[in-house]
Image (cartoon, rainbow, N blue to C red; front, side, top):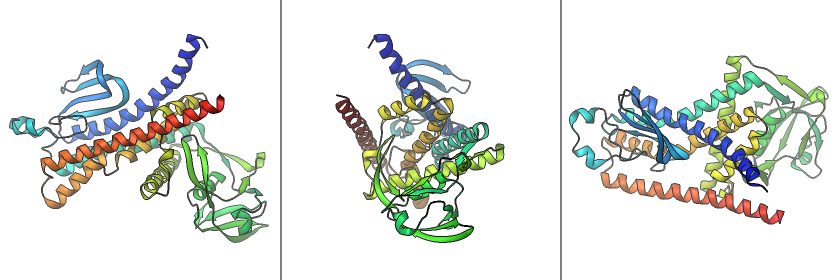
Length: 381
């Protein structure tokens, strides 16, 4: 393999990865920045990336906009912060003049600080809705109707009495418009009894089935998923093209965003209680691979990946872990309830715990990526 080919291959993964990650990180940090400004907080720095500074610009408000060498994140540093994680600089705060204290983050009312912190994850969800709206408006959707083309012998569907030609109308009272709608509900309902209503020979028939929970290989690893044991049709009459105006596209985008939020939150909750395996967690290596693979399919699939990643990062940041946005919100909830903030010692201890948690999370994700790559190499070998 020539050097040129190697560099081209590396670039085909690296460029889409940096585009997706930078877009998601910028929106997250811009959410913090915008609400901070609206709340009267002075912003010292807005950095896209970490480490040595490659370029900068200072705006008329004194904010230093930085482009840093390590493009794996970013931060907004408000006045009075010790770092980009909004950890208060207690030493500097004790010596700060009153005029500076007024525009410092730590001196704001608790509701303002909570609003600034929550704005980052909220911006991630807004970005996802904007992307999905654009996708649905410009691309529309090819929808496969939820008609059963085949039933696997011995499957939960066979035991429940599903037949070829059944048209699924609803599951648990929720209308089903496409085969994808049915797959989403079934995959999230392993070992859960579901109530189906199907149309058969012009009549409505009620069926009960319990999808079997099995390991399924996804682009990000192996995940537990409910399996019903039916297949969809592939004939032209089984497909329909849906187009949307902007308001309808926005509604569909909000539904899509909520679905991804619900499934991601369910997975994270499953990891906590031991129902889901942490082996599905992926780090920058796998995200870069998926970005490169998706980019080959076109710009719209790459934007779709950015929307999903944006939602995941927004939810991850809402975890009640010190150092993350959710940890800050937990501190502020305590302060609002008790009428006083946590002690300096307690906050510093919490930040250390949060840093350790984030470090372990990154190590687990990177380990999963390396194990998967090693297995691929061994198979190729």
